[in-house]
Image 1: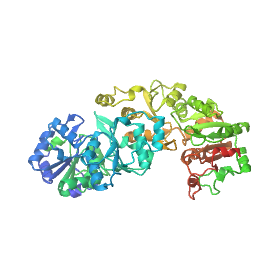
Image 2 (image 1 turned 180 degrees about the vertical axis):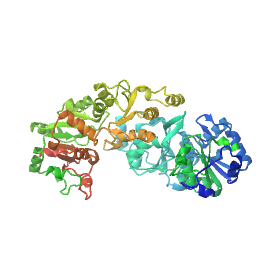
Image 3 (image 1 turned 180 degrees about the horizontal axis):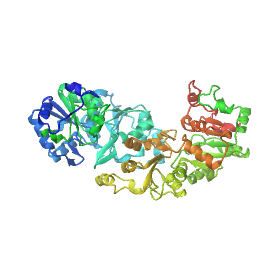
Length: 313
Length: 313
């Protein structure tokens, strides 16, 4: 039944759980593992949604395995653990799986470029750098203050003659960078032209914050895509490279797992394409119910609630 | 004959003029007006190509009207006049038609939004600002040093509540900006969400400089396109809005005009779509002759030379 309901455009439509205690209990009982998106599900920026710590505790009491899956590349797993602590939500660093970590694992364990040509040129923040460090991957760019400056006429020459480039760079990895600069883009373009692999932590076009939308990782890396004419391999949701890495680490039966999220085109699609037993949409984030209740909707969750705290019944 | 040769994918193929003095003479005689792209045709960055001042003088002696048509939005017509002077090429400010000027003319004479809601939020350099000033169009953003800074947590709130936005902005205009910043993109996205018109001086993905390619205006404005989900109306080549504005200003018979350029997908397409009598490709810039000599080539010039100086014979 669950598998049928979670098919794209499934005819039976999603089940509305809010206020229906027996349906909620049955839904929770179907799964051993819950994968959670964070922003828009547990909180919005610094605002914690009602009853979240209690809901997470309830699931732990029912012996569910929990994984927190986030596309936010600016934070490392350690940063996320701090955020969970500050919000009063019980979670361990090991339960967090971010797109920066996903990218670092892909680079170190799957791509495995031969040293020393495995250095990563980073367009992104310290979250990416920390996860690369944790996997022992060398990198440059990123938060280097030398790249937060004006492009000079000499820079044009030195990018062109290669003297500003690091010979060992074999990968360009883009994430959300709050400090874009022309020289960062110019260097990224030069590395790609030289044949570097092109990866992205994620390609979300927007970042929800403060009640509205801001440029996301996919927008900030768009100049490199345009200038190079190449598309990066994205390692965040809905890329199945991320699902494979999560399953590899946590070892579970996909049919007994449920993805919980607020975005149809990342979270819910991620769960459906990954063949999970179920997907649960919460209406506290980006997607509205009209999106998946409309006839002809392409991505439809198994079930939905107004807010995650509704699972408390 | 000429009209047939300049059709896209014309069967007769482009005429190779280099070294063929009588063919060159006949070609020049066909036209009263020559529209020139600058970078890649007259010079590459600060490097003047051989015999350019003499070629321009020769055309003036043969009573040709000359127009210099550039997509470079960072320079105003006045800036360009200085560049021509420094290169020893005879040209007047009035003969220069840049994409920033094209955008300013479109905004002031065609779009004509009612005051005071006609203010332009600029993502670009001083060339855009100068041309808006010359047309009496109010603007903000651009080279404002307050926007060359880090995005703060307060900025997220103040973009969201609108207190960082200028109420009078009705247009977002993007060009090449050597100083991109997260806050510039966030503001542009907010204005577009509020309903501002979206214009671009040009959407060239790359900028040739120092013998290689750097991010162009189309790449630097890509974050706004991604984040907003909207495409700007481009006012540089190959947009026919620019051709219409040029014809409106200079008043000529299109069949007696020839576009000279180095890029198939901007210059030559611009001339062909504009119904000009001819197009001349020079091989000193981006496009290689293999591009238009290949069978099935989509954009084919009327004629080509190795370098513009070859017209001296």
